Length: 346
Ligand code: NAP
Ligand code: ZN
Ligand code: ZN
Image (cartoon, rainbow, N blue to C red; front, side, top):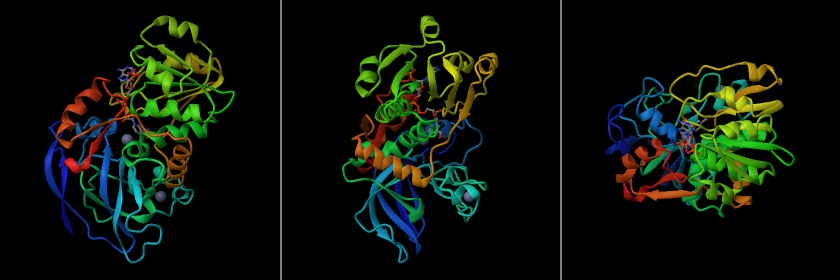
């Protein structure tokens, strides 16, 4: 057991502050990672404020982790000291169910073990990436390709794979019209990845404030959803709409933007339920779907894809003592496009 520095929320909605936590000893198949960077995902904020229901405190958030291997257990074969690695939203799963066997650990029947705000196999709380070190079983560690710097790679571990997985699953690619709804942490990666996959990409954002950025990141078109004309001119346009919005939305209005047989995939996780007008779904044989992060093999595939296409996140690097301020800025959609904590400042 070792004691390491971390930033934690002591209680729901409380400001995060510096503290220390215990990490388990490095077991036979474990990797000890010296964390260099941790991204701030909107999910960190939902959970630290108990927006999704009861949570475990103190909470050390952070599931976009990039660092370097500092020690390996005697049975570890995949990683060696000095390797550049990442950890995403979960650190273990049952390994036996039909989904784990297919590398879809995110949908583990018994529930995967969340990187933080979860309980490990011994019933101890898990603590995430806003800390100097983490111990993780080698099967749940990802390799970060050399050509990606660790700071811009960190957000790929959640924002990258959460957009890559549905874009691949619903065949975003040449000849497909894809809309990315919301241009925050997830959304801006969705734009980059959909463009790299060859799709024609449209951003649907609340305003045109980030239009220049969106076009630079790979969007072909950019519209403001605050303008009612957007919904008139784009009716029946898209094969796929990917919603990354963190707040409840009128999905009926976005279903109307799909072509016949089109799909609206939601990855946003708002704290409140929505009510939905089903008529746009019926008229056009449309699908409304959801998607959660990605499994270990697909997360590695995404990292390799991003390296091949030179895609990292657009980040604002912050000190650990700026985390609370960053949370407020994320909540007011004032993020361009991911805050990343320089863990050396903890
Ligand atoms: P983020 O950086 O805050 O981005 C969310 C974007 O949604 C904002 O930048 C904004 O884009 C838009 N938005 C926010 N409030 C809105 C409102 N009231 N109406 C319309 N648009 C609004 O958050 P994120 O880190 O990308 O995460 C987005 C959501 O995905 C969160 O709910 C998070 O918990 C969830 N998530 C889900 C998964 C999964 O596996 N499914 C994984 C990670 C995160 P514009 O300024 O462009 O309008
Ligand atoms: Zn996340
Ligand atoms: Zn399983």
